[in-house]
Image 1 (cartoon, one colour):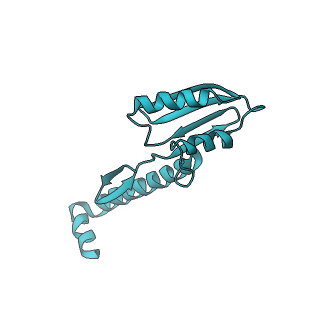
Image 2: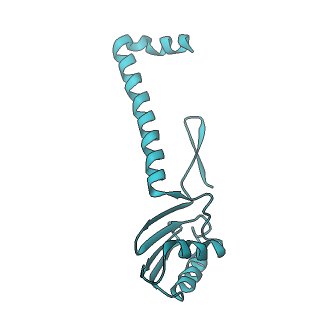
Image 3: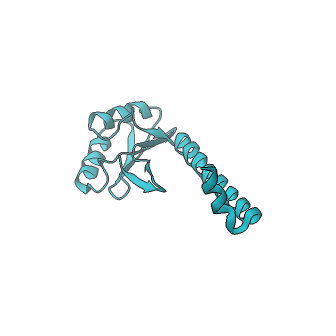
Length: 136
């Protein structure tokens, strides 16, 4: 999984992701990112399955969007097909809601830190850094 450094800590980027609504599934997996040939193979593979109406794989984002007839196919079956091809990892994939919750929590932490820093700066002026250093 891709990582980036933020303020002295390593943070994972979302690279295993899925979102589904009836008739539409989007899956993101790092093995697809930057691999045009594999994306085309996945498109062709899924397009041959009963109930699959359209498939679009994007090597820039590493994602596959599948539109399907819910009377004939279902998201769990399509995810199983993708997993069998090494393009979906259910153990590592997060849903849109999980991704949003994590992002919202991270944003809340950053905003809280910024607000605290602003308040300390306002109250203590230039001595805020000295106070924080002394507390640590």
